[in-house]
Length: 88
Image (tube, rainbow, N blue to C red; front, side, top):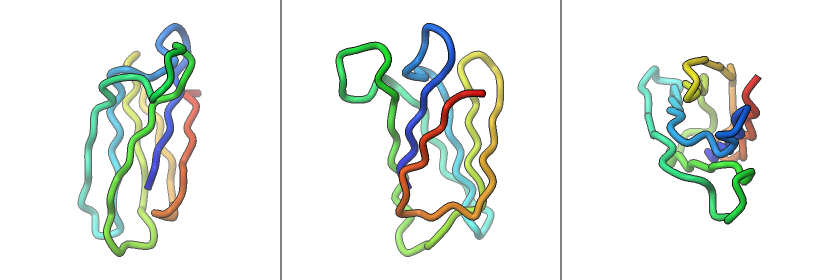
């Protein structure tokens, strides 16, 4: 599962956001966004990759944005997708 983030305001790359992926068995993976995705411009969204082996879908993706807000995307979400999330 690939997750692309774009935050509001001056931190468009979502530096410091935490993404939690909830697998169908209830276990979670967490990864903190440490920097901007491969471009040199500030508006390039950050991307994360979650290797989920043979699972076909996940239950939920939760984003804890740097400004303290929380956003949840409920599934099922296919594990071979690019999930593009803009902060609301």
